Image 1 (tube, rainbow, N blue to C red):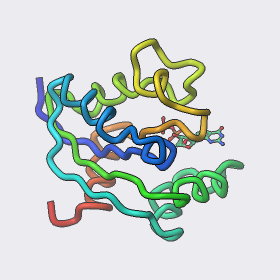
Image 2: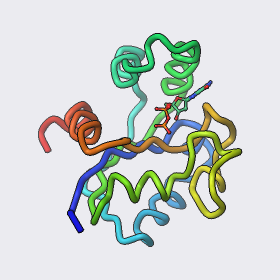
Image 3: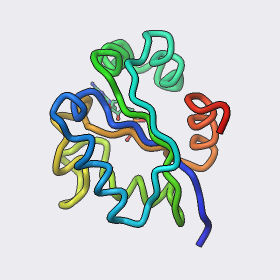
Image 4: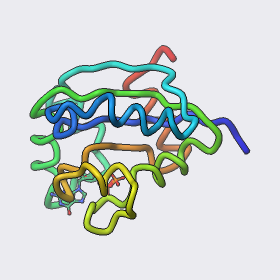
Length: 136
Ligand code: GDP
C-alpha cells in the first residue's frame, strides 16, 4: 500500500444541492483524509486551463460553463492508494454506468453534472494538486 494524495472537486451541482457534507463523509468513511479544502467559484480561465486536455472535445465549452456556474469545493485527499480508490468511490464518469453505492450513482444528475472530480492517475494528481494548492 502506498500513501498517495489526489485532487477531488465537489462540483457545482452537488454544492447547490447541499451535498458537501454527505460527500466528504463518504471519503472519511473510506479512511481517506481531507488534507486541504477550499470553497470557491472558479474563473473561466481556471476552468479552461484545468480541463485543457479536453479542449478539442465537443463538450468543452459546456463543461467550462457548468464548472463556473457556482461554487465548488476543492480538496486534497490522502490515503492508501488514494488516486485509484477515489476513482472507485466516485464511480464511472457516466452515472448511468456507475456501480451501486458510488458517489456518481447516488448523486450525479447527468454525464456532465456528475457531482465529483477525481484525478485519474498519480501524474494528474500531482499536476492538479499543484494547480489549485501550489503551496502544499
Ligand atoms: P472523469 O475523469 O471521470 O471526470 O471524466 P473525463 O475526464 O472524461 O471528463 C471530464 C468531465 O467532463 C466529466 O467528469 C464530465 O463532467 C464531463 N464530460 C465527460 N464526457 C462528457 C460528454 O460526453 N458530454 C458532456 N456534456 N460532458 C462530458
